[in-house]
Image (cartoon, rainbow, N blue to C red):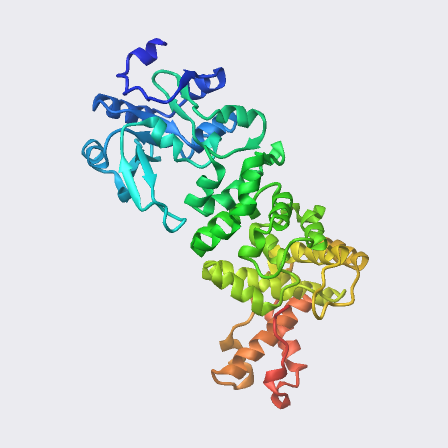
Length: 455
C-alpha cells in the first residue's frame, strides 16, 4: 500500500471475492480525479463501503480509460448519503440512486447496494431491498463484465463472475442464468447486442447460453417502453460495427420486434449497411437507409412508435423522403441542391449510390446509375461557393418598391423565385436581381406554379 493510500481512511470491505488490482487498474486508480477521491473519503469517514462499479471498470480494463460516467456502489442508505452530501440530486432515490456533485464540475451516480426481486413487468423491479452485500448487488447485474467492482483504497478488484476472463475472451456472458437475467428486464436483449460492438476491437461473440436465451426471450422486448428501446437502438446504430450487429439482430428475429416487416434473409439491406460509403453515416442517416424500402407511412408510424424526438423524427423522415432522387447534372441545379441540403448534400448522393449498388427497391427512383452519381459527386466537390452566400440579396421591402405588391403569399413566392434565380446564376448584387425580375412574367403567371428553393 502506498503512502498516499495510507493517508486516507478505509471504507468497509466488500464481501465479494477479491484479488489485487492488475497493474493497468492500479495506474488507472492512481490517476482518479481529486473530486472522486474526496467523495471516497467522506463515505469512508462515515463507516460506509464504496466501490467503483459497472462500465468504468470494464472500460478501464479495455484500455478505454477516460474518466467519464464513473458510477459508485455504496453501503450507506440514501438518507445517510444525503446527510453527507446535502447538495446531491435525488435522481433515482426510490432505487437508491443519487447524483453527487464533484468539486471539479463532474457528476457521479452513487447507488446504495441492493437486491431486487419480482420483475413482474419485465422492465423494473417490483421490490428494491437496500443492503450491505456487495456480492448481492453484483449478482443482480446483467453481464459479467459489468459486474465488477474496484475498491480504490485497498487496490482490490471484486470480480465474482470472472468478467475479466470474458473480456479477455471477447465474450458477452450473462451473470448467472441468462434466461433469468433477460426475463428481469427485456431491454437487456438490446444491451446484449450493443455490447457485441467493441469498436476497433471488432465484433465479439455471445456465450452459448446467452445466445440461446436471446432467441427464446425476444418477446420480452414487448414489455419495454418504446423510449428505452430507442435509447438503446440509437447506440447500436452509432456503433463502429453497426452493420454486423444489425445483421445478427435481423437473423435472430430481434429487429422484427420493433421495426416493420421481416428482417431475416434481407441480404440486400445488409449489403447496403456494409457499403464502404456508409462508414461516415450518422445514426439517423443509417436508420433512414435501413428503412429505405419501407413506404413513408410505415416509416412515420415506426418513428412515432419509438418515440423519437420531433427533431429526430423530422430528420429521418426528410432523409427517407428524398431517397431515389438526385439533382440534374447542371450547374444551376447543383447549386440549388447544395443550398438546400447544405452539409448533407454529399451524404445524400453517396446514399443514392449505395441504394443503386445494393439493389434496394425505391418507388419512383430516378433513372440515374452509380457511375452518373460519381460524376455528380465530382462536380459537387468542384463547385465553387456562392459569391453572395446562401442568403437572399433582396428583401420583401425591396420587391414591394419595384412591383407595387403588398404583403402576402404572392410577395413571398416572388421573393423565393428571385432567391432561387440568385442561387442558380450565382448573382452578387441587387442590380443583377433587378435585371432578373424584369425578365419574369410574374404579373400574368399563377404564383402557385412559381419555382421554389427545394429538392
